[in-house]
Length: 251
Image (cartoon, rainbow, N blue to C red; front, side, top):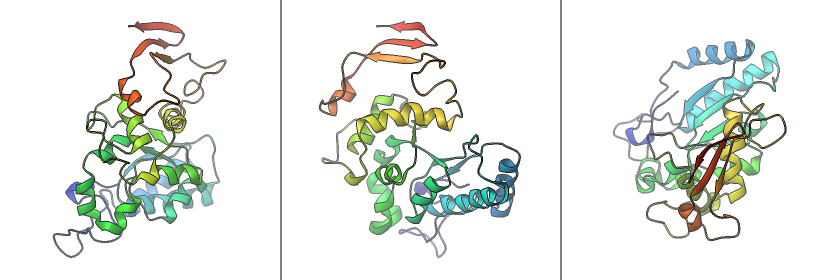
């Protein structure tokens, strides 16, 4: 639906804080009416939609389309519509995500790539609503965590650390965390990387939790991460990986 904030191609409601010309707020990469028809047809015909949305206006109009689809054709719990990235918000849309059962697929490492650049692009007011993981969970959303590899390293321990501390996995900055009120717990981060991602992939019938009848996909670490300093997340090593009940890796 849009591009990225750093290139001013993410679709915003208002101009960028460092706008290069009047009306510099990005735009939809697919004409809005065309995207609306795609969403309505997908929902009508039992197809889950997954759309790239970074800017607040891209998120807002997509939620409008999902809401219209549900009003027309009813809520279908077997579908999992998903928005990808969701970096800055019109605050009322956080609650709408949960109410419409639209899943936010988000990447914790993105928040720590260039916080200063984000603040230049969005300004001091809008930047407070960037990557609002805590508020999304509190509103009732299930988050799907990932890395967007190769944009950032595929190592999930980095993303878990980013989400729990809101600090860079490489520099441990800023101290106390960037927009620290949006930190999540370790349990929430792990669930977002497992159950949440299975939801986004429409595969909760087989993966996402350990339960009878599902695939025994798991990894065993060299330490218990709970109750420890967050830095232990970065030091953890995998000692065994099991896929569908079969050991496929041993340290």
